[in-house]
Image 1 (cartoon, rainbow, N blue to C red):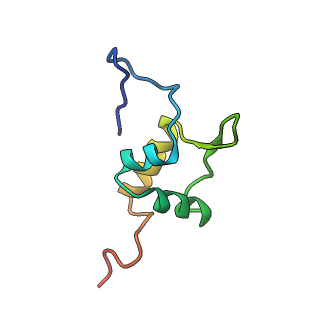
Image 2 (cartoon, one colour):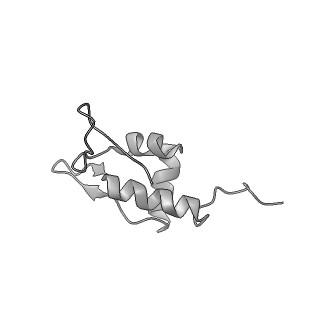
Length: 80
């Protein structure tokens, strides 16, 4: 489970992350994150008032869980 805290050390559940920020927290590329969404491997990101993709902490944690369960795989990785 990922823990995100604001400057005061409290959990910030309301923060929204851009795809680049979410990908960085997940240690993947932005293009991988968007590809997984396009392929239906993860649920589509929410949209803000400007229609930009945004991810909540819950979204990021769900993606992390799928990564840990090996549901999401990079092509060619882990294959022999």
